[in-house]
Length: 216
Ligand SMILES: C[S@@+](CC[C@H](N)C(=O)[O-])C[C@H]1O[C@@H](n2cnc3c(N)ncnc32)[C@H](O)[C@@H]1O
Ligand SMILES: Nc1nc2[nH]cc(C(=O)O)c2c(=O)[nH]1
Ligand code: SF4
Ligand SMILES: [Mg+2]
Image (cartoon, rainbow, N blue to C red; front, top):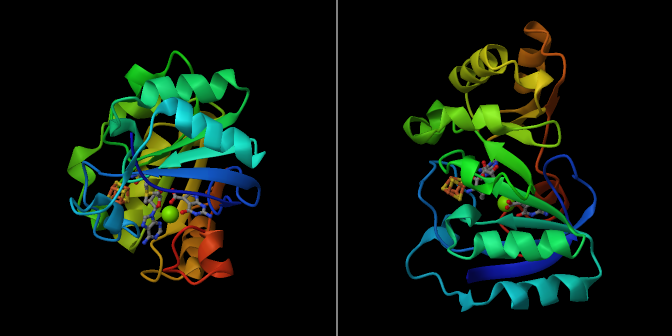
């Protein structure tokens, strides 16, 4: 598997935000979002270490931390990702996958990690690649995240939350594209539309550390 970084930190995003987590970041992505904060991991020349699922499991076990986040890049494009998910779950770890909404989740639903799935909104430039039937595969422990950079994005998120009844299916987060929209604008939008059951999320690691710092 093509690993570009592994580190321990607090999870800065999602339902486990604030808890310790081990991160494994994989190289390569099938999208190119306008705002991507880890585009370096998607570049063909990015250096990586080839590691087996067993080696990754051993690293994770060695940290003594129970939450594992697989991210990237797009982690579900790694050839051995199913083997890795299997090993981590078998070891009793809490496995979260950050995925971009452009990979069919049906293939990953037997042995179930927790999915944090983005729906890429208009300002990402990648909305056309969204596989909307993924929404129907999500359950109460999963999350749909709308990373929003404009009012147009927020209106699209609202439409999807309503049409898929997302707040009754899974966790729903609105998160600002870092630096593109003020969090208060999202709060105002939530109040205006009475978005009960939806949470605002700010990437906590970008508040704690320099926003461009890697490995945190
Ligand atoms: C770098 S992506 C990797 C996983 C997967 N490719 C995806 O997009 O979900 C991890 C998370 O960071 C979010 N993200 C990337 N750039 C961001 C930015 N500039 N501001 C806020 N969130 C960002 C993505 O939307 C995604 O939820
Ligand atoms: N601390 C921290 N938490 C995170 N949660 C999701 C991340 C990601 O890049 O997917 C991330 C990250 O890069 N750092
Ligand atoms: S899908 Fe994720 S990793 Fe890929 S470009 Fe978009 S934010 Fe970056
Ligand atoms: Mg990140």
